[in-house]
Image (cartoon, rainbow, N blue to C red):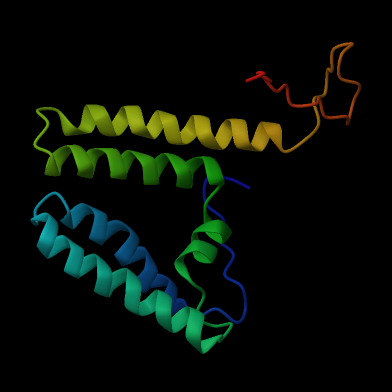
Length: 146
């Protein structure tokens, strides 16, 4: 898969997907111009109402945002975007002098989180003598007598 999967599953409503795209881009962007209180209302309505409809209606044509993101974007991109926006928005509301620098740092953390999560899903391809392939090492514990 390239950066974006462009295949739309048959049952999914294209207008619903366009709405999610507008929400995914527009709501985080609006956080740079709105107060936290005003943005909270916008985000609650823009994310909450469609998400509720998706989950309560159980119609295959109206996927929730998480499933939509999962289908169209690779995890490394989604995690990087989410962390970058969270860091930049938080730093803006906290009035940090360079909010996008913190956002970039958080974006790198998002990428690293995804990278290591994906890497650790599989057994160690080059295990050392202490951990044969496919076997987990016991978790060390510290015991203390009272």
